[in-house]
Image (tube, rainbow, N blue to C red):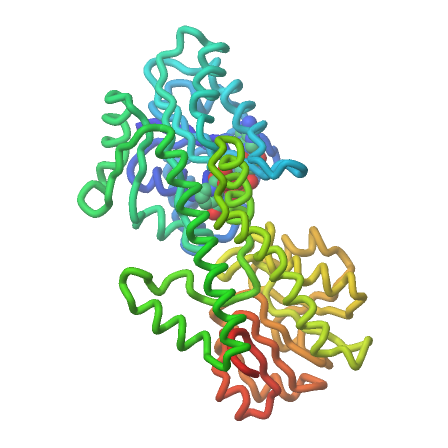
Length: 434
Ligand SMILES: NC(=O)c1ccc[n+]([C@@H]2O[C@H](COP(=O)([O-])OP(=O)(O)OC[C@H]3O[C@@H](n4cnc5c(N)ncnc54)[C@H](O)[C@@H]3O)[C@@H](O)[C@H]2O)c1
């Protein structure tokens, strides 16, 4: 099939690469010239494990192309996927749909023959109706079905998740569109649940899922606070809870609060929708407020650990909103860091992948280190803010030699407490008496 993908970000690019690997002809369009230039020249524009190899393979084979020209992408496409951003509106926190509507308007003129326009972006309930109306207005003769095709990939596992989705949700009542999507996703038919639902149900499934996961994170963080006061150990509690198959182990890792480009904006958008439709979503409202508070609390915790010394050097490990990605958008690490800078703290940072993205925001307000050990040179405390796997395997002897004070604050509960304490570090983490 010929597929057009609008937007080459964290969703559009892995999706385009994955669809090319399945044997389709894919043209990705973006409006950022520098991105398209890089992608055309063989330079991958974001970090995801396994992405670069597949991208280069299909760029070379010609199955994957990049363009700034909407006509070139959409003309003759069987499926057009919209994967542009839906950031939160700065004031109302509703999903800002300007990029979605602009893309719909731009693509409409070039539709040629029967086409399925599939919204991969996360959009509020009813947006499919708006997209359809825009397309029909620009191009009344268009033979088109607008469907909802929500994306569930996890950043850091985007390629893996493309090939191993838990489910594919196809939101449309059109049999014709369902047939096209069944053909496109035929390679997954035997191993993945395909849910054919109405467009509005499909739009709701995406928000309801993300809000539930955000609540699960908030829940375990609240339990961690409880454990600290009650003398229990959150790691043991989470394990005990997670072995119950009705609860599940995933998303039970205590931390500094959820972040990223999806959970904060999607919980806010869902809460807004609840208000709009007159169905208050109280659990989600509470989760949002408490998660925001938590990040401030964590920054205070770090500052308090070195309060005796205003000049103390703080080494921060981890800037990305989670391990496995270079994405710093709404990262708890960055928000905690901003608060520390607000307290005039002296900070050196290190992240395996997110340095460039973080530098664009932090500029020269912090120092940058080439590795975790360098970050700790002369440091009074090392603070772990992102759950990168390699932070678990650091050479503690080497670290000891670098630090001024042997103090580690582990806000991701990554390290082995006994081992770190045995090495003589003063160690604190989340959800247990320190
Ligand atoms: N990032 C994730 O993990 C994830 C997961 C599931 C769903 N989503 C949803 O998918 C959508 C996209 O997210 P993302 O993280 O990929 O965003 P992103 O910001 O990384 O990428 C969006 C891209 O779209 C491009 N774009 C915007 N308007 C355009 C237009 N008119 N024509 C061509 N290109 C245009 C932008 O230049 C940008 O490159 C959002 O709605 C998001 O909520 C994201």
